[in-house]
Length: 128
Image (cartoon, rainbow, N blue to C red):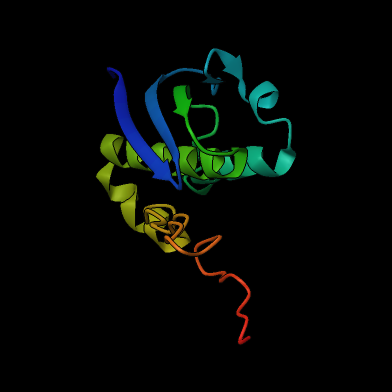
């Protein structure tokens, strides 16, 4: 098997993933998963597609993460891993789609409007 690459996005985060056959090592920006994401919850989020397909020890994953916060980065990485796994075996797609890992979450920050302090907040109204 050659390298399989995929991309995942969430909010402002972009994850580029390269999957190769290996022993389950995940390296993010030249750091191991447990160093890059110290939170066990975020580590769980990243590994969800692998756990769903019971493929945790099968692939080495090299990741380039950029932009956003840690939550957005973890969810972008989850999407990228799911997409790469589907490129390897298209028959896995229904299982991943049922868990919601194949859907790109398009929610982003609403832009600030002119004449307002924030996106929805208004300046205090004074009648007199």
